[in-house]
Length: 113
Image (tube, rainbow, N blue to C red; front, top):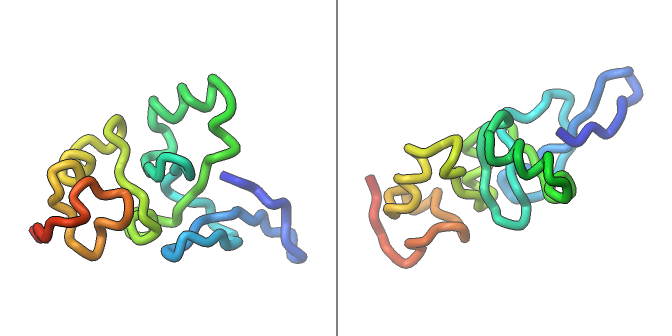
């Protein structure tokens, strides 16, 4: 989580990404993390993300989301490592049309579950 210090009341503040893809301050940490460059979201304890962070460089592109709906609305896709079932649905083009976003492999198809 990107901690931005404390606000005037001494409450820790976090920077999350909203459904419009823009950052905003929150006093509640995000439930999911993502990578700005690859537009992938996943669990905070994702083994793949943890390995990437250990190698360095990944942290600068790290973003956080309040929930999955926000990550999807912002145009991110699920991680194939920590969210394999959701990734398989995304890969197969089975996301609802409103949730496909720019990261979908089937943006031209109209397949709604």
